[in-house]
Image 1 (cartoon, protein in one colour):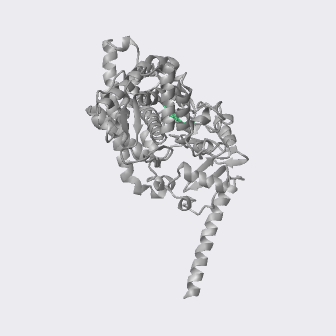
Image 2: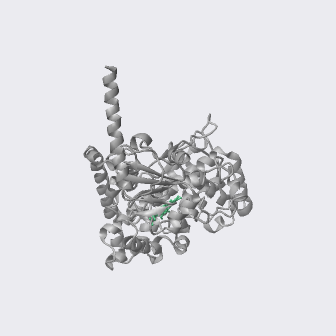
Image 3: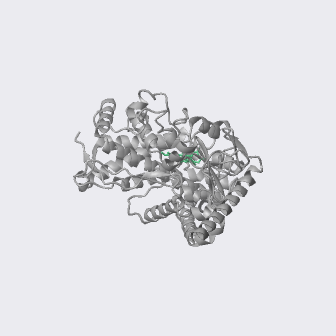
Amino acid sequence: MDLLLLLENSLLALFVAIIAAITVSKLRGKHFRLPPGPLPVPIFGNWLQVGDDLNHRNLTQLAKKFGNILLLRMGQRHLVVVSSPELAKEVLHTQGVEFGSRTRNVVFDIFTGKGQDMVFTVYGEHWRKMRRIMTVPFFTNKVVQQYRYGWEEEAGRVVEDVKKMAEAASTGIVLRKRLQLMMYNNMFRIMFDTRFESEDDPVFVKLKALNGERSRLAQSFEYNYGDFIPILRPFLRGYLKICKEVKERRMQLFKDYFVQERKKVGSSKSMSNQGLKCAIDHILDAQQKGEINEDNVLYIVENINVAAIETTLWSIEWGIAELVNHPEIQKKLRDELDKVLGLGVQVTEPDTHRLPYLQAVIKETLRLRMAIPLLVPHMNLNDANLGGYDIPAESKILVNAWWLANNPESWKHPQEFRPERFLEEESKVEANGNDFRYLPFGVGRRSCPGIILALPILGITIGRLVQNFELLPPPGQSKIDTTEKGGQFSLHILKHSTIVAKPRAF
Ligand code: HEM
């Protein structure tokens, strides 16, 4: 009996070894010198060994084992993980064109109409055109100077509303909920010259729910199996159906409530904001000129809803959480604001440039709690070479930017939240990618163009909150929970904490 079992196991092992050898030799047959990584098994590749949760921390553990460039075979997909500043420079800068495309998966294909947007399109003519069309309405200093009054007003309204909530100063409130409304207003003022009056606005409620659902569905690891192994795709039918429904409802909402509305305003020539064009007017001009179609217009709105609002909101939420858990840092920041601006003088965008400690707090938040820790996945359209290894065409390239900024070999006590590092030993490091150890917005061709808006919004919001309130954990708690929730390439706080906001008396 034992002998029979042994024979059976041996035959099985032999079978697996043969199939593995065939798979590897198929690639090696092309004379590929592939990066190191765990030994793949047929069909599944490394999927059963490494699991679904390919977050920045798990990928860091793999890098410690296999090195700064490693290859994972997830079913039929190749995934290359890059974990050193030198290799990041190679991917994002030196070979920026070769690695400047994006991979999508079965779910991102649905939400972006197979790359009709800007964020997830391959590197080429369409991307260049979309980036050009989006630059004037969104990504210039003129936009910042036009809209910063709006952002200051929105942050001011948050302060006033929180002061009116009695429980804010006693048991505490989920501050994030009010900040979410603020972030939507900050971006919807730019996009459509419109804002939502309250958290109960029915369109806002609908929009927030659909955007939340879109993010959950896209960032989840739940659908990996059907993406990695095409023969399993029929089992994903239900999931993909929900994705399609959410996508349709969202696009319809963007169209009916915002784009069409703005078209009516445009045709009646009664534009508010002193007749200045808002972003969608520029985008619709491009459509009228035949440069893009109506779907592209809606995908631009879709991209901003995700890329701009959520990332900035997560970063604000992380910043506040760290300040609540580090009262000494919060006090030092408040002292700077009081000293530089004067007691009760509300911080504005130009002020943020003369508040070095505020800048350092923001940088440190983006370092330790990077909202997009693996950047948005890059891809090489053709076979390429990286770090002396061959990279098969259409590999998904993940740059572990979080690890670059949290590796103890290149940062002093990186696990500590210590803004002072950006005034002391790292004083030359900026968020714009001037140092390949610190890339919260990426760098190079596919880097985040929204950095120009995100940094002032972060400065105004965090500055105003700390100026006007003492931010504390709820009664009976010494700290708030900062457990992380990682997604396909996102990182946010798991629990939206209750925070006590005690108004300061001026
Ligand atoms: C704290 C806030 C933000 C963070 C941390 C962040 C981070 C990032 C990162 C890491 C990337 C990918 C870079 C790469 O793949 O190499 C990215 C791409 C992008 N971001 Fe942001 N972002 C933020 C805010 C914004 C805002 C406010 C906007 C728009 C108003 C925006 C628009 C975009 C777009 C359009 C892309 C895609 C660029 C391309 O593929 O060419 N982001 N962002």
